[in-house]
Length: 226
Ligand code: BG6
Ligand code: MG
Image (cartoon, rainbow, N blue to C red):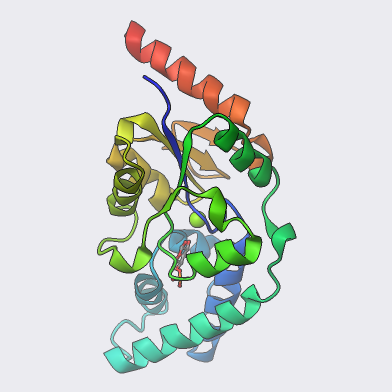
């Protein structure tokens, strides 16, 4: 089977905004007496803004302490701080190898998609100067079920007009890898703790077009022989 599309997560795959999400949540959480660390933050990767807040409140034993209105205000405060920190993003803020990979995929005439649940994704792509590198970006505001549900990856496949089994998905979050697998795509995980990914890489430095195509071919051959 031919590889027809590569679909990327954004935060933590294309740029290191995963850390900026953490810093913004940590400061808001501290103000309501909840401490979160990097380990706990791994559970928030790929999770929508409101669901992240719910998990933080649960973590601090305060799930019933705030009204819906107060929760919206807390999420709004986190987002304002996060957006403020995005001002430091420039075209140089991409993770190593990603710009080259996007160019190589385009040169091979394979489609590129984005499957990020972040409502800030369009602004980030614009700040990085790579909005035109994607053939289709799934609209996070239309997604009902956050990762690990496959909804956003399926929406990206549909927008690109490819079948999930013709596409690779790339993620830095365990919930995201689950979403790719549940969509029926081939998953590539970047970073530790992603044992459920079909291919695991330590960093985007290892994420080259050669590696992706070799992996795709070897997997297609092993399916044919099994
Ligand atoms: C995901 C991040 O990409 O987007 C999560 O991994 C984040 O940490 C989610 O909560 C939603 O982002 P935003 O920008 O809409 O608050
Ligand atoms: Mg991510």
